[in-house]
Image (tube, rainbow, N blue to C red; front, side, top):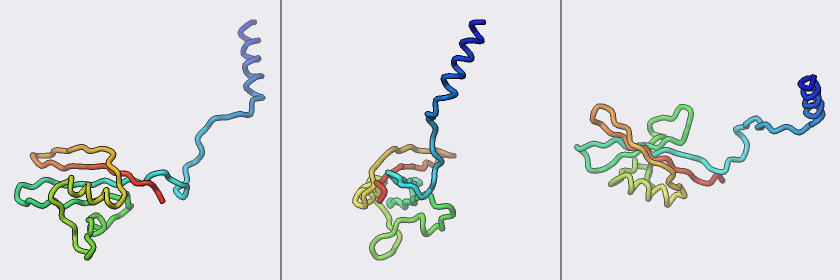
Length: 118
């Protein structure tokens, strides 16, 4: 009998409480505090320069949109990933995380960056 009374009491108390805690539906047009990008470089022993591609999260990026360009519109090459990071830092990007993937003796370096959203 006590179980029934306590169950009814809990239902009664929670049933009249109109407060709820839930996430709101995410809308892509809402304000975001940060935007992110990923710098990706494949190592090659044949070339001393590093070609870096960048992923801004575009749905279907063209290969040209994945390359960083210099002031004259030419594909930017870097001496190292640190050189690329310094370039992106000048553009307002901050380093978040780095990791390396290795597949069949080829390594790829990934650096995640963030920037305050405008």
